[in-house]
Length: 445
Image (cartoon, rainbow, N blue to C red):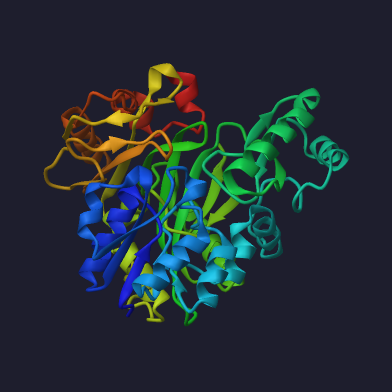
């Protein structure tokens, strides 16, 4: 096991990793930018190191400063969390070249699966269903036009190096294609420092379902079931749940088997998420692999009882998984709601400032992952995620009722948040019936 881990992230995920390390009896180093100086969670770390200015490019995206902080503090591993450099193969390579373990997959697996275009190629080779589209990164305008004509409109352009909706454009007409391509490349360059994009046919009214994978460095790989992440706005997930209310037993088994097959082909280890679209006829299509821990990992933890962060750390240290596929027995139903400091009535405008009153919900089967507290500051420079409310109950109707109670009980003032919208979403009959798709939020609210 590692002696000391540097947490190369901030906010709720930094606190989540810090707690897992403490329970593993591993010392922690938290890094922070000038913007995050004085953050409450920093006091819980064994050491805290400032790595630069407020902007991410001046701090959390500075790989050399992160590695220097690890070397100065004697950290023997770095946990990247999610976002920032979590899926950056060059950063992982630099860490390991400096004899600092990167808590994540091998660089080779990251390059194969972390890049969406190359992941599609592997999926096709292993007969995992994919959405019709380009075989790799788009090289020029003429190729883009040709492929779009072949697969038919509408199409979607996606950034090859990232996720979270950045670098994505839906195009309904050929006349808008090249303008959308330019916009997608510019956005991808700003978010991921890569202009690589690819194109797929746009699947109308799908569900978004993902499979959680965990694998060790000794060839053992298991799936931990699926999460339904269909409730989104602008490709940003709002609500996740497990199991999916839309999958029958056969589709679930085939979906999970496809995820395992893909990761085995890439010799993947660590935590990872294989994402799919499921159409109205229960046909599923591979879309991407997230080679990191996900924001919504607590949903899987609640239904399986497996601590994914601790397992991820143990795997990175070279330990074998202490369970196999037969031992994974999901039980009950879990739902997560993301509470963002945004105003849904103003096109989800980020709302930075000081939280004067923070009163999270509680009770049986309730978990809140957050860095929030009275007096905490929400920065305009970073992701607006403030808290995640996760509930776990024996059945889906019970989980829904518990979540409704939690969202009503949660108080965050005076900042605008997504709480009012989430209360309406969770109360909607279409959500109760499970008859939603990825466009539900835009159409309904």
